[in-house]
Length: 200
Image 1 (cartoon, rainbow, N blue to C red):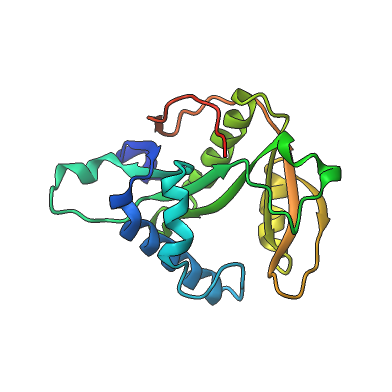
Image 2: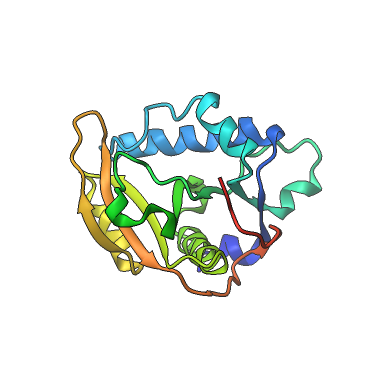
């Protein structure tokens, strides 16, 4: 585990409208890093507010905060990580044969570069797995870049099974993965979210 997670207490919470600038910064930084790696998963420069505001309004975007930043009232650092978790199956990828309502879906998973390698991505995937279990759903699903074998390997190493790859010319994503839900305890961060079913 990276020393950051030992020295900096972390907490997970739902994003609020005031968090939008920090989320956009984190996603923009992540998108630029992906581009530097030759990955075209996300738009260069990140996402516009019109893509993120609905996630905040629907209460399905979650932020991982470094609690020490609250000691400085002038600190405006972006969140340590972000993840969206909902029941919105992308209709271009998941068909009726997949029983789209049987899963929760991960979107916008990103970890700030200074926290890379700290295990936070793994911890958020486990948290999402437990959320799907709590919602009574058998699956946790995601889609990722078709041309990124490294990222696909990352998900395989964490227990996700490749379902299929949907090759649409207008989508860089399309490699579909799923993992069974399970009640996995989270010890890396404090979960401040309210246990509830996530609904559309």
